[in-house]
Structures are given as C-alpha cells and as structure tokens.
Image (tube, rainbow, N blue to C red; front, side, top):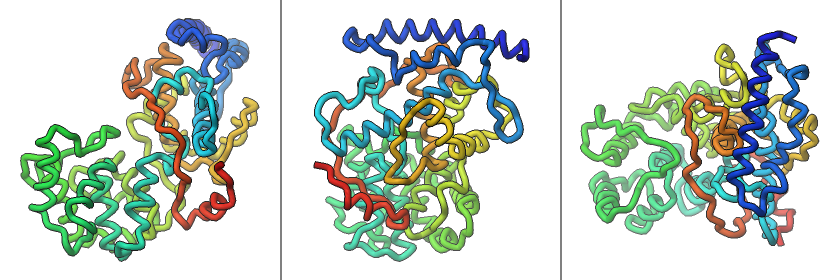
Length: 383
C-alpha cells in the first residue's frame, strides 16, 4: 500500500472515531443504541491496511466514510419517502439526524416543489401547452421557486398566460406581498438580481423584465431546437445573471415538460453543495472533473448498494439519474456536518439550519408522462 495513503487513513480513522463520539454525544438518549445509518458497520473500512481506492475517469481516488454514508443516506431517504406514501405508523426512520433535520428526497422530481411544478404548473388541462406558454409558466415559477408565490399570482390574476402578462400588475402584487413582510422567493438557493442589466431597484422587477425579454428574444423556440441538454444548458447560460448552477437546474425543470425530451443521464453540472459533498466523500478528488465523479456514482450505484448489503427501492424501477446523484452529494454534505464533523469540505459549515417538521402522509406522486411511471404508480395501493 502507498505509504502516504496509509498515513492519511490513520489520520482519517482517528478523526472519524472522534466524530462518531461527537455524534453519540449529540444524539437524543433514546437514539444512542445505534449510529446514524448503521455507520458502525463501517469500522472495517477504516483499517489502514485496507485503504480503499476507486478508479474514476482513469484516476485513482481514496474514499472516506462519507462515501459509504452517501449510499446509506440515499436508501434511507428513499425508504422514508415510501413510508410516508404508505402512511406508515410510528417513526419514519431510526436515524436521529434524518428525524431531526430536513433533507430533500433521493429523487429530485419527488420533492414537494418539483411535484407542484410538474402537476400544477406544467401539466394543466386548463392552460395552453404551446411552447411560449409552457416556457413562460415554468420560468415564472422557477424564478421564485416558491409555491405560495405562484398561488398568490393565480389568486390575484386568474390564469397565468403569456398573452395577458402585464409587468405593472405582477409587480404590484409581488411588491405588496413583500411590503407585508412575507417572502416571495424560496430560500433553497439564491437568485441573482439581474439589476445591472434591467435596472430596477427590486429583484422581482428585474426578473419579470428578464422573463419578458426571453420571450421577446424567442427563447422558447430556440430551446425546443436544442438537440442535447448540454446545448440547452449553453442557451440558458446566455440569459442575463444565470450561471452554471441555475442554468442546469432550469434545464432540468424545463425538461420535465414537452419542450425538450433529453435523458436525465446525458449531462450534469455540479453545484456548490455537490462540490462540497464530493470533497467530503473522497480524500482528494480535485484533479477529477466533478461531472465524471457524479457519472461514476450513477453508473455504479447498483454495485455499491450491493457491496454494503443495502436494498435500494428505486422509483418504480427508475434508477438514480445524474441530477439525483448530484443532489445527493448536496444532501450528504449537509448530513456530514453532524455525522462527520471532522470533514470540513470546501465550505466548512458546521450546522444544518432547517429542522424537519412532519407534514404527514404524501399525496400520490405524479411524474412527467414520458417517464412511463404513472401507470405503475396507479397500480400501487397506498392504503
């Protein structure tokens, strides 16, 4: 074994044990009979003589305990999703961290906001489905990424269609909501203001102008002309104030609709949270393209679940896609702040801000029809 690798693992093993002790200390007393996600089973992985490396894009990289927790987290978070659908009684999970803090689903399209976008914004029998209106609705929703903001606009304006778009009316409604002390933007990620381009003092005013600008510049048809997700991503990067992270997220959201029909496995861009998670999962991955790492996780998911004896419940037969593996790196980065505090990552954050608040059972999910999942879901009983 490489001597440097052995020394690194000796340090990691010592730090990891310290981290486990901290986890035990912070757990509620009724939860200390087992480590989060069964991580006590990882002790054998930390023996320096068994230092494990994997090959990604032709380069060898050493894994950390967070790498193994990534797979356990994905499986347990998916189990929680199914338990909520099945209206299971009792605790949704034995994992104290997942019980205490809020984490997104293993599959991005299963999250509350994505489900609302798919069901209540994109696939609407009462709204036009031409390319301009689909593009308008999706971007209008995603610029704010907040269900309550969409519902406010609908309540005040009725049907939200491009032909009746009026900047002043939209601005007045949103400005009044802000004046009342309520948020109109989601806290999930930061939207740049685009004020240097459109010149308004308030962020939402610039975003409304930006949306109108995109329609005027024929972005809907330009998007539908794109042959690949990478090409659509590049088009969205030309939008004022839209960077790589938002460009990829928006490309994914637009692809839920009939505007494009790309595979979610053809292109990926790692956001800041995913980069932090990657840094925690591997001792040194800086020389590997993050997209190659995410693709490795997608390509080898079944092997790693099997290696750890994990039964992963796919989304009605649909394996994790690139966007899901990217998101899971974000979530394991958050999880590791508590479970593995010795791994600082790139951001060095130590706390998870959002606490989990139970909302009870979930409505039956519904996905883009082109995925061919809804028929399988309809055959399933959620009693």
